[in-house]
Image 1 (cartoon, rainbow, N blue to C red):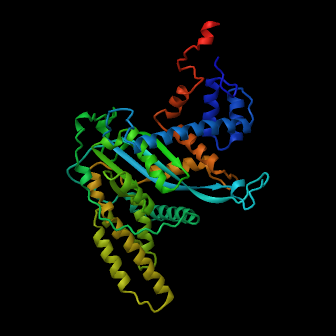
Image 2 (image 1 turned 30 degrees about the vertical axis):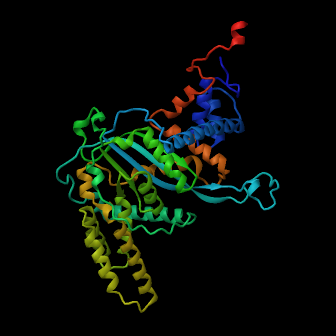
Image 3 (image 1 turned 60 degrees about the vertical axis):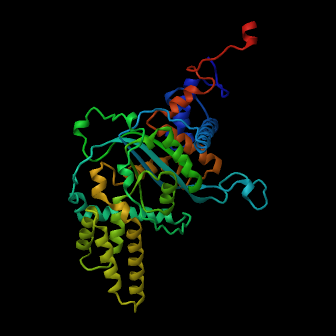
Length: 429
C-alpha cells in the first residue's frame, strides 16, 4: 500500500493535508478528518504532517527562485494567456518569540512569549480574458460610486483596514518619483506568434472587464526584497510575461511599486480605483459640500482627469490660513494627498486601461488576503516564523486553481501515482 513515513496511505495523506490547509486550526482539521475520513488523528500529529508538506513546498518555491535568477526556469506551458494580471497586497498575523530570540536563550516553556503582529505578503497571479475597445466602453462613473451611502461605507471599511495594517507595519520611507509610461500595453513580444487567444466558451458575453480564468497565489512572511523574485518566478512558471496585455494592480504602497519596477517592468502599473476613492474622501473631509466635491473628484479620476484634481487640491491648500493648529493639520493632509496623486498620476489613466480591457481594482487580492487571514490570523494564534511560512505555502497551494497541491502530492515519494523502480535486493528476493 506504500505507506508514508507517517503510517498513512497517500490518499489519506492528501485528505489530512487539505484539511490542514482548509480549516481554521489543526484541531478543527483533525476533527474533520476523524468525522469524514473516519481516521482518528491528533491535532499535534496533523500539524506535523502539514508543516512537513509545507516545508517541501517552500523548498520547491526556493528552487524555482534560484532557477529564475540563473535564467534556467522554464514555463510549464508555452500557451500564452490573453491577459495576465498580478496583484500584490499585505496582511497581518501574529508571531511569537522563539527560544533563540530570548535574551537568555533558555527555554521559555509553553505559551506564546513575546507575540507581536507581523506583516505577511500575498500575490495573486491570474490569466484572464477580455476584449479591447477603440473608445472608452464605460466613460461615466458607475451608479454604485454615485450612491453616497455605498461610497461612505466602502471608504470607511478601507480606512479601518488601512489603520489596522499600518499599526504594526514597517514604515517605508521611499520617495517614488518616477513617471511611468504606458508603452508596455502596446509592446508586442517577439514570441507573439506562440500566443493562443484562449477565450472562455461564453466569450461573446465578455466585455472590457477582465474575467479571471485561473488564479494561483504566492505568500510569505519575508520582506519585500526576497518576496519579489518569488512572485516573478511564479509568473515565469505560468508564462505570464508573454501575454500581449499585462497588468499589475495594487494600492499606493511604496514597497509594492518598488517590487513592480524591479520584477514586472513590462506590466502596466494600475492603482486600485477603490483606494483612490478613499484618498479623495480624506482630501474632501473638512470641505463644505463634502459629498458634492467628492463626487466631482471621483468623476474626474474615473475619466482620467487626475491633473485637474491635483490642481484643485493645491488651490484648496494654498487658500487656507495656517494660523490655527486645525488649519495646519488640514494643510498637511492636503499636501500628502496631493503628493499621492502626483506620484500615481500615470497609474490612474483609467479610460486607457478600460480600452485595453485591463482591471482597475485590486478587489481580488483584497478578498484573497481575507481568505488567507481565515487560516493564519487571529488574536488566539501565535506562530513561530518557520510554522507561519510553511502553513502559508500550504494554504497558497491549496487555494491555487491549477491543482498545484494535488499535482505536488501525486509526485511525492510514496505516491500511488508515481512509478517505482524495484531495487536490486527486491529483485533478488
